[in-house]
Image (cartoon, rainbow, N blue to C red):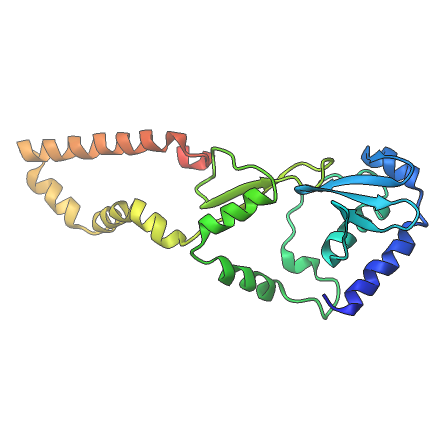
Length: 226
């Protein structure tokens, strides 16, 4: 961490002391005593000194810019108790200065680090808290995190090699669809429609379709059921 980031954290300590701490306690239902405010953040509880604004956890001073500024921002800059806006925002839309790294650069770093390492990512998610529900919407990694206790949990979805995974599942159906998009099935139908083999083929196609629909009933995506 560069000195400029540390300076910003130290400066924010001073700004924190200008805000009404009793309002913070009521707004966010914080645990507090005469010396500290206590705020759970992911898998840890941080305490903020009421006299100096210093943040620490497990007795160790926290100078991490991302953690400290997130805590200061949520406590000091929320006009009301924060709620989700239910509006999707891309990472790129959150860039506030021309010098902010692009979302492509930011994401590429972690895509490269965890490419082909879904199990490692799951282990890391487990260490920082949250939970993995039984229905994962087909994702290789699906983890729900609760950033703060007063905000609902939000999921992390990672799909590793979608084209390969779903290619194995639906490759045969894709090939069948390509064949039936030609005029071959029509020619074969008119040739064998009045034969025993034609009847057997039609029954096999019908019951195969029913079985495929049955297998899709448990799919979490509603539109797959139609």
